[in-house]
Length: 76
Image (cartoon, rainbow, N blue to C red):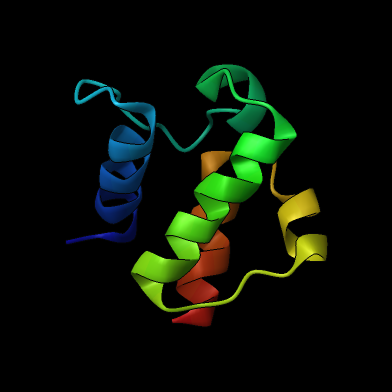
């Protein structure tokens, strides 16, 4: 399973929407329709799934799905 496929699975479960499709250029807060607190919760689920730790500073730099994928791929 690719990084984006795993990430999509996490997002679908979190949002309760099995039809949600991730695209690399999606903007996290606006396209996901979540606030910054929900983003932190979602990032926690990403950390658990991939077995990595994402610093608050790194989270603040993440604007798009591609940013998260890039960070995960570097960590793995």
